[in-house]
Amino acid sequence: MSGLKINYHKSEVIVFGVEEEEQQRIANMLNCKIGKLPMTYLGIPISEKNLRLKDFTNMTSKLRKKLQPWKSRNLSYGGRLILCYSSLSSLPTYLMGMFQLFEGSHKVMDSIRSNFFWGGTDEKKRYHMMKWENLCIPKRLWGPGHHQY
Image (cartoon, helix red, strand yellow):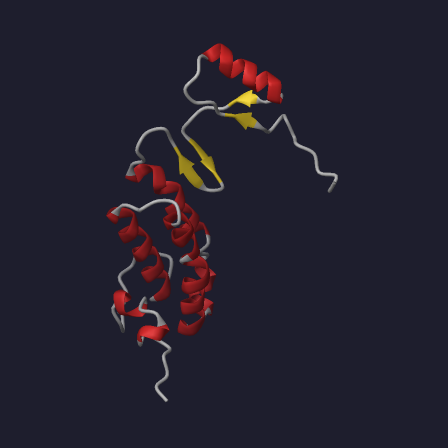
């Protein structure tokens, strides 16, 4: 109805639990290639085995790509806080909708966001006026930006 068509050159089918001839028959029927695992779909790693910490390194590199050095120099603390809440927290939230992340990946993501907020994308130590854990408390629970009336 919309006029969109499937691009069979980009499409793959991944079949589980059948012999190789049956996989090929299904791929021929759908006019697709046979795909292999592990793979990434919509930024989420998919594997037939348990995922390890190294399987989530793509996530931390995406976080670092969003941070150019000019952003930390030219934004106020309020602007950096909004960027942390809106953009830098969206990727981990998206992944946590599918997986329970490893403790090590939480620490890496928090250090990237904390370093950016307190002054830059480089790894230099900066003076922090508030603990990062306190900065992450939602406003409704008396976090930063909550106004008492």
